[in-house]
Length: 256
Ligand code: IPE
Ligand code: IPE
Ligand code: MG
Image 1 (cartoon, protein in one colour):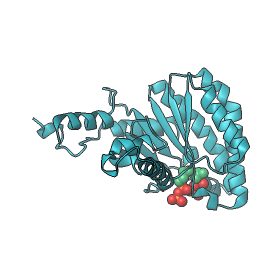
Image 2 (cartoon, protein in one colour):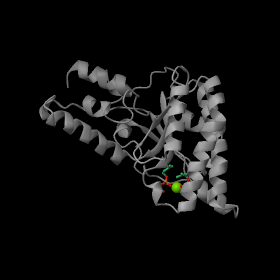
Image 3 (tube, protein in one colour):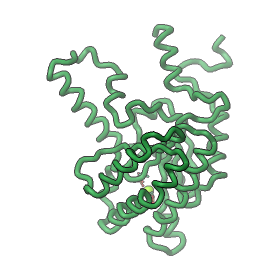
Image 4 (cartoon, helix red, strand yellow):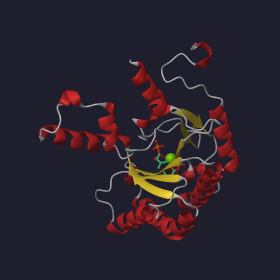
């Protein structure tokens, strides 16, 4: 690898903030159903309480100066849940955007939605577009909502677009670079996540940001999402601070 490519690689992955704060935090908000079950409540109550956590964490991330926060809200596989739960989750997303958009805008939060928009209910689609357009000039935290998102689906869509460009003669297969792939992903233009947090004790990615997670640090919190508060969030951030990221190199201690 040439020195230039090496510098580019480090620039792409390394957190920009010298304080050790991750530039981009991505969260798999898991455990709502179990949180409710533990209390003898229907799963929907877990989801309802999960929205309260979303509000707290978004606010704290903004206050701390984190630049990008990605929240996994609904996966492309979550359609396989019981119809009533899916319907409830759709209603919750609608209610969240309707009730919080003004506050988010006032807090200078810019919203971006990733995931497939194909076949989405037109009402939800227009609300999501409204959220993106209504906050397009905000310059604070970028809140990325992964909705109807699955990394394999994202990659399939990217490959289809690239293949089309090749078939139309605009590009030769051997000219395809990783930057071309990135620019066709839903996350085009976003830095890769530095830190991926999953709540509820599960230790898997569940089809989340598979390409982008190449050099992410992982943090698995034992509590369910409705119990993940600001102090749990800050604990994850302080744990990240102590990680040594190497990006395939040998690390600071032996790099001279
Ligand atoms: C996360 O909580 C919310 C979504 C996936 C929408 P879950 O609903 O997955 O809760 P558990 O994992 O069943 O407890
Ligand atoms: C991942 O959680 C999806 C979201 C948090 C939206 P799941 O609860 O759907 O993942 P699995 O099924 O336990 O792997
Ligand atoms: Mg789950």
